[in-house]
Image (cartoon, one colour):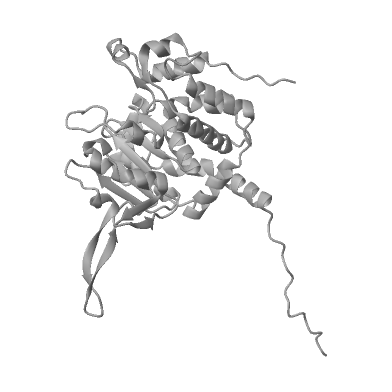
Length: 350
């Protein structure tokens, strides 16, 4: 019995359309949110708002400044998120004697196989996917500025040669708000590079009891990697494609503009308490963060609630209060919440 010859060319499968690929990525992210929270729950208890804000910054491709007292698991949280997304993690402890080359890397003289010598660039810890700059305000401005190019351009320049950083790249910097002696406050130009200023506060008593019981009972379960660096980069593209109505963009821009003193139409309390308001980058990050928040919550459009929810972490490090506000005990978060309450909410017309 003879067998009929088969075709040597296998059947061609049509590639998925860009729309189908984006939809699959969105469904994977939405479905993975519960798993992300479950993995973080192995080592982190509570802090849901903090976790969401850091995840939003990660999905939007922004950097985070994390402010909180010692012992609130800032380092553990960042390291755990890096493990979940399978990102290369590096930690730098910022100290007064830290030099820029200790962050970016330096050139050293090495012998060549031909018997000569040449300068070779040795990469510093900034060449990672997720860099934790621990207590960044404890190092002088010269060393703080070594991160500016990396944060903005995702590259390091040494002796006129540009060295691209690994993608994706995030900087999560921490600072202690209690001990200010011997610190170097970050300049406004560098603060503006951070998408969010996330504040970690003390846990409620019940959650703190769980933390103490869990951390003194034995080793916690290992964190499972759920995504890859390539997934994170695809999420970046996906977030930017989330549609946003023009009235939502206008609402965000007007909200940011209302923080600038001595401008037409700003509230009186802004002129009274604010020395310097937020710039255009605040509006960009506010809309980008709102897109990521909408996507995390399974929506394909931005709402007023998304913008309002991210107003405080986006603006709190971009609004500079004056001496009168400090003397009266006025906090920047209270000023932002008052701006949000007074902002005119857009209404769709039929």
